[in-house]
Image (tube, rainbow, N blue to C red; front, side):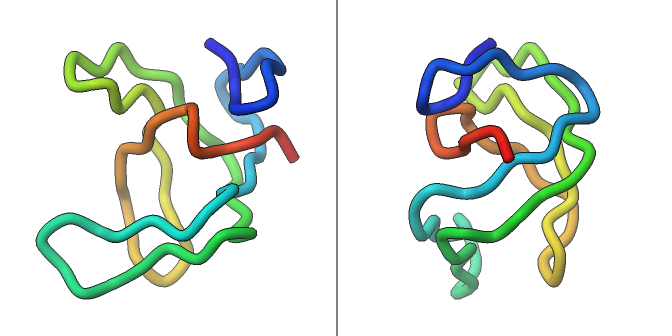
Length: 70
């Protein structure tokens, strides 16, 4: 699995969000530049292939195309 820049990702890596993302079903927004520690790679059937805890929001699944390795 690779990030937006093509770098390989592994469990436990730290990543940074590259653009503002709206949280589905909520009025919250994850700001670009938010740093996330300790990601887990998952086999997401809907394209969401990263599982993580986002500071101030909580547990969430993300797509690897919206993050870059920190």
